[in-house]
Amino acid sequence: MIKDSSKFPDSVYKRTVLAPLFEGAKRHFVDPVRDINQAHLVMLADTGIVDEQSAREIAVALADIDATVDPATLEYTGEVEDYFFLVESELGKRLGTDKAGMLHTARSRNDMDHTLFKQVLKTKAETLLDQVLLLTDTVLAKAHTERDTLIVAYTHGQPAQPSTYGHYLCAAAEVLQRDTDRLLSAYRNLDHCPMGAAAITTSGFAIDRDRMAQLLGFQSPLLNSYGCIASIDYITGWYSAVKLLFLHLGRVIQDMQFWTAFEVGQLYVPNSLVQISSIMPQKRNPVPIEHLRHLASVTCGRCDTIVNTMHNTPFTDMNDSEGEVQQAGYAVFESAGRVLELLTTVVALSSIDDERVCATADKACITVTELADTLVRRDALSFRNAHEIAAETARSVIAGNTALMDGYDSFVLAFDRHTETTSNLSKDEYIDAVSARNFVAVRDRPGGPAPAAMDRALNTYAATLNGQKLQLQDARQQRVAASQALARAFQQLLDS
Image 1 (cartoon, one colour):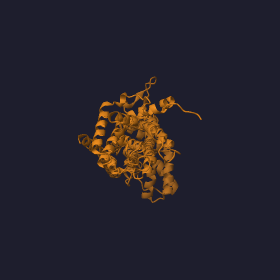
Image 2 (cartoon, one colour):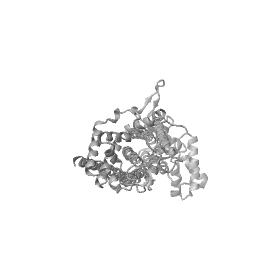
Image 3 (spheres, helix red, strand yellow):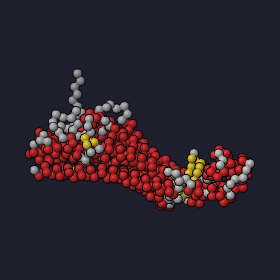
């Protein structure tokens, strides 16, 4: 029989696992551990599980630890396993192990861990949601300002039809608002408290799980105690929602990069966001957009890291979802916050180059669809026949290197060739039919770029944004009110 005389922790295990976890706990989990200790003590006293005198002594000791132990100065020595046991050890020094041990009645590190992980995620999620809502506000404000600003809309990388910058931004805002709904839904899944589950199956003590949830700022307890320590969908759900947000933003960012290319030149980025080549002084490099693109991709990748870590893990309490993985997830908020802040600025300060839009519109005949539509309405042609006439007109003007607006003679010839009659369109009516402004104006259906349709849409988006802000405001107020209630309840123990 091999006799194991080594002392815990093994030096390699200490260096590679326990010390990094301790350092992470110092950075992220000190306040949540304090709040859980205080709330659990208040609940134990309220339910009579711990007598009033003992509860007061424990409260005094916890307050002293909070006042005299500076976690930032601590170094991991291996004398205790982790930060939780350090606090318990400090409590024992002040009260003795028996009295100190009362605090751990009817709880486990299992339910404590997932509770404090949720507390940290909730706080970080609220900050990220603030940034998302500010970006949405900025996008919608810009859309309102640029409601009538013409752009060239591209499909398959080619000029397709005229639209407006406001119309484009509203499309981005719709996705942003759906992504925000997903984030708010994922946030609500963070808002259920695991405390009271203990290790797996709750406790034989008459604990008050609702009281714990209330004191810690949760909407309610998470009902099934096994699920409290095993179901990590609050992690996968949150990071999946965040990934979708940045995947979708990345597509808009890529458009911005394309629109700033010299050959397109549709989007103008101001000098404050442009870097000049070190060797080619003529080059205006809008590199913040490149940083937006790669940081959005980094954020997606960081989300994948967390979600994929959960793959094929057992449905039980496990380290795969705990301290080290949770801390790795916080890097998501770092890169995500940088993207949201920078993108908000880029959207606010950039503008459309009207001259380049007009030049591209003329050269690419992007209004020719409306010429076909007008022929259907005015000359009672089938759309397919009208399409052929419009296509021939476009080919002719492109070959002649002229604008579609100057192609009335080509149109007359094409119309005669396909119908053997004369069109009802006069030259002035033809010019109006193929103008970009008319193209936009007649598209007044719901969701279209015409001014009235845009105004209706913007009102809808504003109402949605207001509702989302109220949801976040209510969640934050719940958490702040709970923090104040916990402080009062703990102070009452101190004063008893």
